[in-house]
Amino acid sequence: MTWIFWGGAAILLVAVLAVVRKRGGEQVVSPVIEPQALTPPVAVQPTALEVPQAPEVPTRLVLAVDDEPVFAMTMLDEIEGAKQVAGLSRHAPSAFGRALEPLMQVVPSMATAGMANGRQLMEVVINGPLVAAADGNGFRAMTMGASGVQQNARLFEPKALQNVANAAAIWQLASVAVAQKHLADISVTLKRVEDKVAGIQSMLEEERAALIDGALKYIHSARQAMRQGEFLDRTRDKLEDFEIQLEQAGTTLLRQIERESKSELERDTVGCEGEYQSALAKHRALAARAAELVACAEVRLANWYLCSLYPDRSKMLESRMQQIQQFMAQVARVQKQLSGALDADCQKIDARFTSDETIAERRTHVRDEAKSGNEALSKGAKRCATIIARVQTVADDRSSMSRLLIETDGKTPTAVYLSHEKPTLPPIRIQNEELVACL
Image (tube, rainbow, N blue to C red; front, top):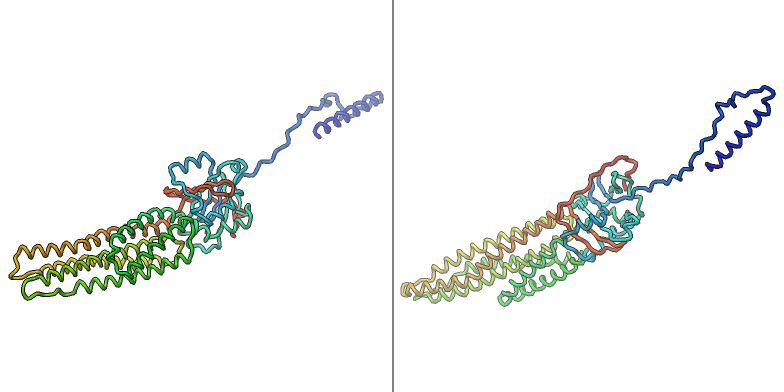
């Protein structure tokens, strides 16, 4: 069209010149056709069609409560992604199960054409405390690019947005990430507990032995399910049932130890054979009770360790843990109680007509029989303290930010990497309030 326009202008000028020359004999001069004003048209080169700039592809999805980010999902290029996952432990995506589904629905909406042909890596950061306190309403969903906030998440399909902007889904993902960090440690803890229980199985009373064995088997089953990302309410309920039963068994053992430690020895009128045999039987039984108490306490703590990994926002976890710590304080006092009873009973192994050498041998024998119980309590107290510290670490991990990298192929996750670095959520710079809409 540009060249057609200028061609028409040239024809028009030629026509005007012809008219002027024809009327020149009539001495008619038109001011608009002065010779100096007649310059040839300037040829204009055709310009290329302006290609509209493609809109900036969003690289980050941010969910916020009151302008404070609680969740961010960032697309990483392959180079940056390889740098991020270097040295991290690779987990099967099935471990995160249904918790990843809402995120996977958003991946194609955020990916560029180039990314869609190869590996995609997403960095996911979740702020535990804020998400835990949210009820799913009032989220602001924004897409962000290099220049900051672009638009609200209406860029995505409503169904995908509804799934992502769901506090329960995000909290579930955070819980799975925390659980995966601790399941390996739980496996080591359970193996140690099983070894100790197996060593004293013959000394356990039948009813408590059945309870401890049943609890350990169920804990293993629950651990395997959690490794696959399954957190069923009925499993959690069963673990809590075992917690109550183990607490009752532990309380019964404490009372039994206290009662038996105060029992009197048989007395001989001549010699100290009666006191010696009575003390042997008494402290042999108390040592077995002490080992049984430690086993019960360790299984109880291992059970609650696993229980603490479930997505639970109630205050029950904290209050129950306080009760367990009070129970462990009672277990610690048992060692002092048994030590006092042992010293008192050894003093009773004495007789005027028994040689000092025989008395010393008998006292040593009794102390040797009690030694296994004392060692069980000492070592068990250290192991239990370690488990308690682990449970408290779970609470800290749950209240802090979680960071993981998800490798995807289209909508399908192929690997998940857990990062131990302290994650940070991106600041939200809202440049235009019209671009932000509360859901």
